[in-house]
Length: 457
Ligand SMILES: Nc1ncnc2c1ncn2[C@@H]1O[C@H](COP(=O)(O)OP(=O)(O)OP(=O)(O)O)[C@@H](O)[C@H]1O
Ligand SMILES: [Mg+2]
Image 1 (tube, rainbow, N blue to C red):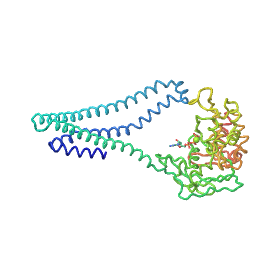
Image 2 (cartoon, protein in one colour; image 1 turned 90 degrees about the horizontal axis):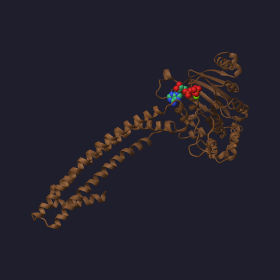
Image 3 (cartoon, helix red, strand yellow; image 1 turned 90 degrees about the vertical axis):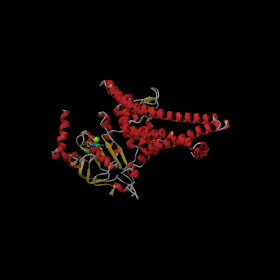
Image 4 (cartoon, rainbow, N blue to C red; image 1 turned 180 degrees about the vertical axis):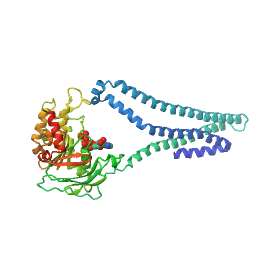
Protein backbone atom coordinates (compact mmCIF):
# COMPACT_ATOMS: atom_id res chain seq x y z
CA UNK A 1 0.00 0.00 0.00
CA UNK A 2 2.86 2.38 0.87
CA UNK A 3 4.47 1.66 -2.48
CA UNK A 4 1.21 2.39 -4.30
CA UNK A 5 0.93 5.69 -2.48
CA UNK A 6 4.46 6.81 -3.31
CA UNK A 7 3.95 5.94 -6.98
CA UNK A 8 0.65 7.76 -6.91
CA UNK A 9 2.12 10.97 -5.50
CA UNK A 10 4.93 10.92 -8.09
CA UNK A 11 2.49 10.37 -10.94
CA UNK A 12 0.16 13.07 -9.67
CA UNK A 13 3.05 15.52 -9.63
CA UNK A 14 3.72 14.73 -13.27
CA UNK A 15 0.08 15.10 -14.23
CA UNK A 16 -0.25 18.43 -12.42
CA UNK A 17 2.57 19.64 -14.56
CA UNK A 18 0.39 19.28 -17.67
CA UNK A 19 -3.01 20.34 -16.33
CA UNK A 20 -4.20 20.32 -12.71
CA UNK A 21 -7.77 19.47 -13.70
CA UNK A 22 -6.60 16.26 -15.39
CA UNK A 23 -5.23 15.14 -12.05
CA UNK A 24 -8.49 16.10 -10.43
CA UNK A 25 -10.56 14.05 -12.89
CA UNK A 26 -8.28 11.05 -12.44
CA UNK A 27 -8.74 11.32 -8.69
CA UNK A 28 -12.45 12.06 -8.55
CA UNK A 29 -13.80 9.48 -11.00
CA UNK A 30 -12.97 6.34 -8.92
CA UNK A 31 -14.60 7.83 -5.83
CA UNK A 32 -18.27 6.90 -6.53
CA UNK A 33 -17.26 3.30 -7.30
CA UNK A 34 -15.39 3.21 -4.00
CA UNK A 35 -18.33 4.67 -2.12
CA UNK A 36 -20.79 2.17 -3.56
CA UNK A 37 -18.53 -0.84 -3.20
CA UNK A 38 -18.08 0.00 0.49
CA UNK A 39 -21.79 0.57 0.89
CA UNK A 40 -22.62 -2.78 -0.72
CA UNK A 41 -19.96 -4.45 1.38
CA UNK A 42 -21.81 -3.21 4.43
CA UNK A 43 -25.15 -4.28 2.99
CA UNK A 44 -23.79 -7.76 2.22
CA UNK A 45 -22.51 -8.06 5.76
CA UNK A 46 -25.83 -6.92 7.19
CA UNK A 47 -27.70 -9.40 5.01
CA UNK A 48 -25.42 -12.28 6.07
CA UNK A 49 -26.02 -11.41 9.71
CA UNK A 50 -29.71 -11.04 9.22
CA UNK A 51 -29.94 -14.37 7.38
CA UNK A 52 -27.88 -16.38 9.84
CA UNK A 53 -30.82 -17.87 11.83
CA UNK A 54 -32.46 -18.95 8.57
CA UNK A 55 -29.20 -20.37 7.26
CA UNK A 56 -28.95 -22.38 10.47
CA UNK A 57 -32.45 -23.67 9.86
CA UNK A 58 -31.42 -24.61 6.34
CA UNK A 59 -28.48 -26.62 7.71
CA UNK A 60 -30.86 -28.24 10.17
CA UNK A 61 -33.17 -29.42 7.37
CA UNK A 62 -30.13 -30.74 5.58
CA UNK A 63 -29.07 -32.64 8.70
CA UNK A 64 -32.57 -34.09 9.12
CA UNK A 65 -32.68 -35.30 5.56
CA UNK A 66 -29.19 -36.78 5.42
CA UNK A 67 -28.62 -38.34 8.85
CA UNK A 68 -29.37 -42.01 9.40
CA UNK A 69 -30.78 -41.49 12.88
CA UNK A 70 -33.69 -39.47 11.48
CA UNK A 71 -34.27 -41.64 8.45
CA UNK A 72 -36.74 -44.15 9.95
CA UNK A 73 -39.17 -41.55 11.16
CA UNK A 74 -38.91 -39.40 8.04
CA UNK A 75 -39.66 -42.41 5.86
CA UNK A 76 -42.47 -43.79 7.99
CA UNK A 77 -44.17 -40.47 8.60
CA UNK A 78 -43.66 -39.64 4.95
CA UNK A 79 -41.94 -36.40 5.79
CA UNK A 80 -39.60 -36.15 2.83
CA UNK A 81 -41.88 -33.99 0.64
CA UNK A 82 -42.74 -31.77 3.59
CA UNK A 83 -39.08 -31.27 4.50
CA UNK A 84 -37.95 -30.76 0.92
CA UNK A 85 -40.70 -28.17 0.40
CA UNK A 86 -39.68 -26.24 3.50
CA UNK A 87 -36.02 -26.48 2.54
CA UNK A 88 -36.82 -25.33 -0.99
CA UNK A 89 -38.95 -22.37 0.14
CA UNK A 90 -36.32 -21.16 2.52
CA UNK A 91 -33.42 -21.73 0.11
CA UNK A 92 -35.33 -19.86 -2.63
CA UNK A 93 -36.06 -16.96 -0.30
CA UNK A 94 -32.40 -16.64 0.68
CA UNK A 95 -31.29 -17.03 -2.92
CA UNK A 96 -33.65 -14.23 -4.03
CA UNK A 97 -32.32 -11.94 -1.31
CA UNK A 98 -28.73 -12.67 -2.31
CA UNK A 99 -29.52 -12.27 -6.01
CA UNK A 100 -31.24 -8.93 -5.49
CA UNK A 101 -28.26 -7.54 -3.65
CA UNK A 102 -25.72 -9.03 -6.07
CA UNK A 103 -27.53 -7.61 -9.12
CA UNK A 104 -27.83 -4.14 -7.64
CA UNK A 105 -24.20 -4.25 -6.65
CA UNK A 106 -23.17 -5.42 -10.11
CA UNK A 107 -25.11 -2.75 -12.01
CA UNK A 108 -23.98 0.06 -9.73
CA UNK A 109 -20.42 -1.09 -10.04
CA UNK A 110 -20.74 -1.42 -13.80
CA UNK A 111 -22.23 2.10 -14.11
CA UNK A 112 -19.57 3.80 -12.04
CA UNK A 113 -16.63 1.98 -13.60
CA UNK A 114 -17.94 3.17 -16.95
CA UNK A 115 -17.58 6.67 -15.63
CA UNK A 116 -13.89 5.96 -15.08
CA UNK A 117 -13.54 4.63 -18.63
CA UNK A 118 -15.28 7.70 -20.06
CA UNK A 119 -13.07 10.01 -18.03
CA UNK A 120 -9.97 8.12 -19.19
CA UNK A 121 -11.08 8.40 -22.81
CA UNK A 122 -11.59 12.12 -22.31
CA UNK A 123 -8.10 12.46 -20.95
CA UNK A 124 -6.65 10.51 -23.89
CA UNK A 125 -8.52 12.71 -26.32
CA UNK A 126 -7.35 15.87 -24.65
CA UNK A 127 -3.72 14.76 -24.60
CA UNK A 128 -3.94 13.63 -28.22
CA UNK A 129 -5.35 17.03 -29.26
CA UNK A 130 -2.54 18.74 -27.39
CA UNK A 131 -0.04 16.65 -29.34
CA UNK A 132 -1.74 17.44 -32.66
CA UNK A 133 -1.67 21.12 -31.81
CA UNK A 134 2.04 20.72 -31.25
CA UNK A 135 1.89 21.74 -27.59
CA UNK A 136 3.47 18.50 -26.48
CA UNK A 137 5.83 16.11 -28.21
CA UNK A 138 5.02 12.54 -29.20
CA UNK A 139 7.10 11.35 -26.25
CA UNK A 140 5.00 13.65 -24.05
CA UNK A 141 1.83 12.09 -25.44
CA UNK A 142 2.91 8.62 -24.34
CA UNK A 143 4.12 9.90 -21.00
CA UNK A 144 0.94 11.78 -20.16
CA UNK A 145 -1.52 9.14 -21.30
CA UNK A 146 0.33 6.47 -19.37
CA UNK A 147 0.57 8.68 -16.34
CA UNK A 148 -3.11 9.50 -16.37
CA UNK A 149 -4.07 5.82 -16.71
CA UNK A 150 -1.73 4.82 -13.93
CA UNK A 151 -2.92 7.55 -11.60
CA UNK A 152 -6.46 6.27 -12.09
CA UNK A 153 -5.60 2.62 -11.59
CA UNK A 154 -3.27 3.28 -8.65
CA UNK A 155 -5.87 5.36 -6.91
CA UNK A 156 -8.54 2.74 -7.62
CA UNK A 157 -6.42 -0.03 -6.20
CA UNK A 158 -5.72 2.09 -3.15
CA UNK A 159 -9.43 2.62 -2.65
CA UNK A 160 -10.12 -1.06 -3.28
CA UNK A 161 -7.67 -2.02 -0.56
CA UNK A 162 -9.39 0.36 1.83
CA UNK A 163 -12.81 -0.98 0.89
CA UNK A 164 -11.86 -4.64 1.22
CA UNK A 165 -10.03 -3.98 4.50
CA UNK A 166 -13.21 -2.37 5.76
CA UNK A 167 -15.33 -5.33 4.64
CA UNK A 168 -12.96 -7.87 6.15
CA UNK A 169 -12.92 -5.86 9.36
CA UNK A 170 -16.70 -6.22 9.58
CA UNK A 171 -16.46 -10.01 9.56
CA UNK A 172 -13.38 -10.12 11.79
CA UNK A 173 -15.32 -7.96 14.22
CA UNK A 174 -17.94 -10.67 14.33
CA UNK A 175 -15.26 -13.15 15.36
CA UNK A 176 -14.01 -10.78 18.05
CA UNK A 177 -17.55 -10.25 19.28
CA UNK A 178 -17.87 -14.02 19.58
CA UNK A 179 -14.51 -14.39 21.31
CA UNK A 180 -15.48 -11.67 23.76
CA UNK A 181 -18.29 -13.82 25.14
CA UNK A 182 -17.42 -14.64 28.71
CA UNK A 183 -18.74 -17.86 30.23
CA UNK A 184 -20.88 -16.98 33.23
CA UNK A 185 -19.93 -20.18 35.01
CA UNK A 186 -16.28 -19.94 35.92
CA UNK A 187 -13.73 -21.47 38.26
CA UNK A 188 -12.85 -19.29 41.26
CA UNK A 189 -9.51 -17.42 41.16
CA UNK A 190 -8.22 -19.57 44.00
CA UNK A 191 -9.81 -23.00 43.98
CA UNK A 192 -10.33 -25.23 46.99
CA UNK A 193 -8.56 -28.59 46.68
CA UNK A 194 -10.87 -31.53 46.12
CA UNK A 195 -10.25 -33.55 49.27
CA UNK A 196 -11.55 -36.97 50.12
CA UNK A 197 -10.40 -39.32 52.86
CA UNK A 198 -8.17 -42.22 51.81
CA UNK A 199 -10.73 -44.88 52.75
CA UNK A 200 -13.50 -42.72 51.41
CA UNK A 201 -17.01 -43.99 50.98
CA UNK A 202 -17.62 -41.32 48.39
CA UNK A 203 -18.47 -37.70 49.05
CA UNK A 204 -21.51 -36.11 50.62
CA UNK A 205 -23.84 -33.87 48.64
CA UNK A 206 -25.96 -31.13 50.13
CA UNK A 207 -28.54 -28.84 48.55
CA UNK A 208 -29.43 -25.81 50.70
CA UNK A 209 -32.53 -23.91 49.67
CA UNK A 210 -31.71 -24.25 46.01
CA UNK A 211 -34.04 -22.47 43.57
CA UNK A 212 -33.63 -22.39 39.84
CA UNK A 213 -35.56 -21.09 36.86
CA UNK A 214 -34.38 -21.53 33.28
CA UNK A 215 -33.35 -18.27 31.59
CA UNK A 216 -36.26 -16.43 30.03
CA UNK A 217 -38.90 -17.97 32.32
CA UNK A 218 -40.71 -16.31 35.19
CA UNK A 219 -39.42 -17.62 38.55
CA UNK A 220 -42.82 -17.01 40.16
CA UNK A 221 -44.76 -19.25 37.80
CA UNK A 222 -42.15 -21.38 36.02
CA UNK A 223 -39.45 -22.16 38.57
CA UNK A 224 -38.03 -25.64 37.99
CA UNK A 225 -36.66 -26.04 41.51
CA UNK A 226 -38.05 -24.20 44.55
CA UNK A 227 -36.00 -24.06 47.73
CA UNK A 228 -34.84 -27.65 47.46
CA UNK A 229 -32.89 -28.86 50.47
CA UNK A 230 -31.52 -32.33 51.14
CA UNK A 231 -28.39 -34.13 52.23
CA UNK A 232 -26.95 -37.25 50.70
CA UNK A 233 -24.40 -38.88 52.96
CA UNK A 234 -21.11 -40.19 51.63
CA UNK A 235 -21.58 -43.65 50.17
CA UNK A 236 -25.38 -43.49 50.02
CA UNK A 237 -27.34 -44.62 46.97
CA UNK A 238 -30.24 -42.29 46.29
CA UNK A 239 -33.00 -42.70 43.75
CA UNK A 240 -34.75 -39.63 42.46
CA UNK A 241 -38.28 -40.07 41.15
CA UNK A 242 -40.86 -37.68 39.81
CA UNK A 243 -43.06 -37.17 36.77
CA UNK A 244 -41.75 -35.96 33.39
CA UNK A 245 -40.59 -32.38 33.67
CA UNK A 246 -40.38 -32.48 37.48
CA UNK A 247 -36.82 -31.17 37.38
CA UNK A 248 -34.74 -34.31 37.98
CA UNK A 249 -32.28 -33.76 35.15
CA UNK A 250 -32.12 -30.07 36.05
CA UNK A 251 -30.99 -31.02 39.52
CA UNK A 252 -28.09 -32.97 38.01
CA UNK A 253 -27.20 -30.05 35.75
CA UNK A 254 -26.92 -27.85 38.83
CA UNK A 255 -24.79 -30.41 40.65
CA UNK A 256 -22.33 -30.49 37.76
CA UNK A 257 -22.44 -26.68 37.36
CA UNK A 258 -23.84 -26.67 33.86
CA UNK A 259 -26.07 -24.02 35.43
CA UNK A 260 -25.70 -22.16 38.71
CA UNK A 261 -28.71 -21.91 41.04
CA UNK A 262 -30.51 -18.58 41.30
CA UNK A 263 -30.64 -18.97 45.07
CA UNK A 264 -29.14 -21.31 47.61
CA UNK A 265 -25.95 -23.36 47.74
CA UNK A 266 -24.81 -26.77 46.66
CA UNK A 267 -22.09 -28.46 48.67
CA UNK A 268 -19.95 -31.47 47.89
CA UNK A 269 -17.76 -32.88 50.64
CA UNK A 270 -18.91 -29.96 52.82
CA UNK A 271 -17.65 -27.25 50.45
CA UNK A 272 -19.58 -25.05 48.08
CA UNK A 273 -19.15 -26.39 44.54
CA UNK A 274 -18.46 -22.84 43.36
CA UNK A 275 -15.19 -22.96 45.35
CA UNK A 276 -13.85 -25.93 43.39
CA UNK A 277 -12.06 -25.73 40.10
CA UNK A 278 -14.70 -26.46 37.46
CA UNK A 279 -12.69 -29.13 35.66
CA UNK A 280 -11.73 -30.90 38.88
CA UNK A 281 -15.32 -30.85 40.07
CA UNK A 282 -16.53 -32.48 36.87
CA UNK A 283 -13.68 -35.01 36.95
CA UNK A 284 -14.94 -36.22 40.29
CA UNK A 285 -18.50 -36.78 39.17
CA UNK A 286 -19.31 -39.58 36.74
CA UNK A 287 -22.49 -38.64 34.91
CA UNK A 288 -24.48 -40.24 32.17
CA UNK A 289 -27.41 -38.12 31.06
CA UNK A 290 -30.55 -39.62 29.59
CA UNK A 291 -29.66 -38.07 26.22
CA UNK A 292 -26.14 -39.50 26.14
CA UNK A 293 -24.11 -39.33 22.95
CA UNK A 294 -23.56 -42.21 20.53
CA UNK A 295 -20.14 -41.45 19.08
CA UNK A 296 -19.48 -42.63 15.54
CA UNK A 297 -16.15 -44.05 16.69
CA UNK A 298 -14.72 -47.39 17.81
CA UNK A 299 -16.07 -49.28 20.81
CA UNK A 300 -12.86 -48.54 22.69
CA UNK A 301 -13.20 -44.82 22.05
CA UNK A 302 -16.90 -44.83 22.89
CA UNK A 303 -16.11 -46.22 26.33
CA UNK A 304 -12.72 -44.51 26.78
CA UNK A 305 -14.11 -40.99 26.36
CA UNK A 306 -15.54 -41.47 29.85
CA UNK A 307 -12.02 -40.79 31.07
CA UNK A 308 -10.14 -39.36 28.16
CA UNK A 309 -6.65 -39.56 29.66
CA UNK A 310 -7.08 -43.34 30.06
CA UNK A 311 -8.55 -44.00 26.61
CA UNK A 312 -5.58 -46.25 25.70
CA UNK A 313 -5.81 -48.20 28.94
CA UNK A 314 -7.16 -51.47 27.61
CA UNK A 315 -7.63 -53.06 31.01
CA UNK A 316 -9.66 -50.15 32.30
CA UNK A 317 -11.85 -50.08 29.20
CA UNK A 318 -12.52 -53.82 29.43
CA UNK A 319 -13.18 -53.54 33.10
CA UNK A 320 -15.77 -50.79 32.54
CA UNK A 321 -17.39 -52.82 29.76
CA UNK A 322 -17.63 -55.77 32.15
CA UNK A 323 -19.42 -53.68 34.74
CA UNK A 324 -22.14 -52.55 32.37
CA UNK A 325 -22.47 -55.98 30.78
CA UNK A 326 -21.62 -54.70 27.31
CA UNK A 327 -18.51 -56.93 27.14
CA UNK A 328 -20.61 -59.91 26.01
CA UNK A 329 -21.80 -57.92 23.01
CA UNK A 330 -18.35 -56.58 22.16
CA UNK A 331 -16.84 -60.07 22.11
CA UNK A 332 -19.18 -61.00 19.29
CA UNK A 333 -18.22 -58.01 17.13
CA UNK A 334 -15.91 -58.73 14.17
CA UNK A 335 -13.11 -56.47 15.37
CA UNK A 336 -13.96 -56.49 19.05
CA UNK A 337 -13.03 -53.24 20.74
CA UNK A 338 -11.76 -51.82 17.45
CA UNK A 339 -15.09 -52.13 15.68
CA UNK A 340 -16.44 -48.78 14.57
CA UNK A 341 -19.94 -48.13 15.84
CA UNK A 342 -22.38 -46.41 13.52
CA UNK A 343 -22.29 -46.38 9.74
CA UNK A 344 -21.17 -42.87 8.87
CA UNK A 345 -17.51 -43.43 8.19
CA UNK A 346 -16.79 -47.12 7.62
CA UNK A 347 -18.35 -49.71 5.35
CA UNK A 348 -20.38 -52.71 6.43
CA UNK A 349 -17.35 -54.96 6.97
CA UNK A 350 -15.64 -52.58 9.33
CA UNK A 351 -18.53 -51.13 11.25
CA UNK A 352 -21.70 -52.12 12.97
CA UNK A 353 -24.84 -50.53 14.30
CA UNK A 354 -26.05 -51.29 17.80
CA UNK A 355 -29.52 -51.52 19.23
CA UNK A 356 -30.84 -48.83 21.57
CA UNK A 357 -30.16 -50.91 24.68
CA UNK A 358 -26.71 -51.93 23.48
CA UNK A 359 -25.81 -48.28 22.98
CA UNK A 360 -27.05 -47.57 26.48
CA UNK A 361 -24.79 -50.26 27.92
CA UNK A 362 -21.87 -48.61 26.10
CA UNK A 363 -22.82 -45.29 27.72
CA UNK A 364 -23.10 -46.97 31.09
CA UNK A 365 -19.59 -48.43 30.66
CA UNK A 366 -18.41 -44.88 29.98
CA UNK A 367 -19.61 -43.86 33.44
CA UNK A 368 -17.74 -46.78 35.00
CA UNK A 369 -14.47 -45.65 33.37
CA UNK A 370 -14.22 -43.03 36.08
CA UNK A 371 -13.26 -43.83 39.57
CA UNK A 372 -15.41 -40.86 40.48
CA UNK A 373 -16.55 -40.36 44.03
CA UNK A 374 -19.99 -39.45 42.87
CA UNK A 375 -21.87 -41.41 40.25
CA UNK A 376 -24.95 -39.92 38.66
CA UNK A 377 -27.06 -41.97 36.29
CA UNK A 378 -30.05 -40.35 34.63
CA UNK A 379 -32.31 -43.22 33.57
CA UNK A 380 -29.38 -45.58 33.10
CA UNK A 381 -31.46 -48.63 32.33
CA UNK A 382 -34.47 -47.19 30.50
CA UNK A 383 -33.54 -49.00 27.29
CA UNK A 384 -32.26 -52.21 28.87
CA UNK A 385 -34.24 -55.42 28.72
CA UNK A 386 -35.54 -56.89 31.97
CA UNK A 387 -32.70 -59.35 32.34
CA UNK A 388 -29.97 -56.83 31.57
CA UNK A 389 -31.48 -54.39 34.02
CA UNK A 390 -31.70 -57.09 36.65
CA UNK A 391 -28.05 -57.96 36.09
CA UNK A 392 -26.86 -54.36 36.27
CA UNK A 393 -28.69 -53.85 39.52
CA UNK A 394 -27.63 -57.21 40.91
CA UNK A 395 -24.12 -55.80 40.74
CA UNK A 396 -25.16 -52.27 41.51
CA UNK A 397 -23.93 -52.36 45.08
CA UNK A 398 -20.52 -53.60 43.96
CA UNK A 399 -20.46 -51.11 41.10
CA UNK A 400 -21.05 -48.14 43.32
CA UNK A 401 -18.79 -49.28 46.12
CA UNK A 402 -17.03 -46.35 47.75
CA UNK A 403 -19.12 -43.95 45.78
CA UNK A 404 -22.09 -41.80 46.41
CA UNK A 405 -24.69 -42.69 43.82
CA UNK A 406 -27.64 -40.75 42.55
CA UNK A 407 -29.84 -42.39 40.00
CA UNK A 408 -32.97 -41.25 38.31
CA UNK A 409 -35.47 -43.80 37.15
CA UNK A 410 -39.11 -44.29 36.32
CA UNK A 411 -38.86 -48.01 37.01
CA UNK A 412 -39.74 -48.82 40.57
CA UNK A 413 -38.04 -52.21 40.39
CA UNK A 414 -34.81 -50.21 40.15
CA UNK A 415 -35.80 -47.44 42.50
CA UNK A 416 -36.53 -49.73 45.44
CA UNK A 417 -32.85 -50.79 45.55
CA UNK A 418 -31.82 -47.35 46.74
CA UNK A 419 -30.97 -46.58 50.36
CA UNK A 420 -33.34 -43.64 50.19
CA UNK A 421 -35.73 -42.31 47.62
CA UNK A 422 -36.50 -38.65 46.95
CA UNK A 423 -39.80 -37.75 45.32
CA UNK A 424 -39.62 -34.51 43.36
CA UNK A 425 -42.82 -32.66 42.54
CA UNK A 426 -43.64 -29.03 41.69
CA UNK A 427 -39.97 -28.16 42.12
CA UNK A 428 -39.82 -29.53 45.68
CA UNK A 429 -38.77 -32.75 47.36
CA UNK A 430 -42.10 -33.81 48.82
CA UNK A 431 -41.12 -37.17 50.29
CA UNK A 432 -37.91 -38.93 51.20
CA UNK A 433 -37.09 -42.22 52.86
CA UNK A 434 -36.44 -45.88 52.14
CA UNK A 435 -38.83 -47.88 49.98
CA UNK A 436 -40.32 -49.43 53.11
CA UNK A 437 -40.75 -46.11 54.85
CA UNK A 438 -42.39 -44.45 51.88
CA UNK A 439 -44.70 -47.39 51.31
CA UNK A 440 -45.70 -47.25 54.97
CA UNK A 441 -46.30 -43.51 54.62
CA UNK A 442 -48.85 -44.33 51.95
CA UNK A 443 -48.62 -41.01 50.07
CA UNK A 444 -47.30 -40.06 46.64
CA UNK A 445 -44.52 -42.69 46.34
CA UNK A 446 -46.83 -45.47 47.47
CA UNK A 447 -49.45 -44.27 44.99
CA UNK A 448 -46.99 -44.23 42.07
CA UNK A 449 -45.61 -47.61 43.07
CA UNK A 450 -49.06 -49.16 43.23
CA UNK A 451 -49.94 -47.64 39.88
CA UNK A 452 -46.96 -49.31 38.24
CA UNK A 453 -47.46 -52.57 40.09
CA UNK A 454 -51.11 -52.72 38.98
CA UNK A 455 -50.07 -52.42 35.37
CA UNK A 456 -48.20 -55.71 35.75
CA UNK A 457 -51.06 -57.60 37.29
N1 LIG B 1 -32.68 -25.97 28.52
C1 LIG B 1 -33.91 -25.68 28.98
N2 LIG B 1 -34.44 -24.45 28.79
C2 LIG B 1 -35.65 -24.15 29.27
N3 LIG B 1 -36.43 -24.99 29.96
C3 LIG B 1 -35.96 -26.23 30.18
C4 LIG B 1 -34.68 -26.64 29.70
N4 LIG B 1 -34.47 -27.92 30.06
C5 LIG B 1 -35.57 -28.29 30.74
N5 LIG B 1 -36.46 -27.28 30.82
C6 LIG B 1 -37.75 -27.31 31.51
O1 LIG B 1 -37.51 -27.58 32.89
C7 LIG B 1 -38.45 -28.51 33.41
C8 LIG B 1 -37.72 -29.67 34.06
O2 LIG B 1 -37.00 -30.39 33.10
P1 LIG B 1 -36.10 -31.66 33.46
O3 LIG B 1 -35.39 -32.05 32.23
O4 LIG B 1 -35.28 -31.35 34.66
O5 LIG B 1 -37.23 -32.73 33.83
P2 LIG B 1 -37.07 -34.24 34.27
O6 LIG B 1 -37.63 -34.37 35.65
O7 LIG B 1 -35.68 -34.72 34.06
O8 LIG B 1 -38.08 -34.97 33.28
P3 LIG B 1 -37.98 -36.40 32.52
O9 LIG B 1 -38.49 -37.43 33.47
O10 LIG B 1 -38.91 -36.23 31.38
O11 LIG B 1 -36.57 -36.60 32.11
C9 LIG B 1 -39.33 -28.91 32.24
O12 LIG B 1 -40.55 -28.26 32.38
C10 LIG B 1 -38.62 -28.40 31.00
O13 LIG B 1 -39.54 -27.90 30.08
MG1 LIG C 1 -34.83 -35.98 32.79
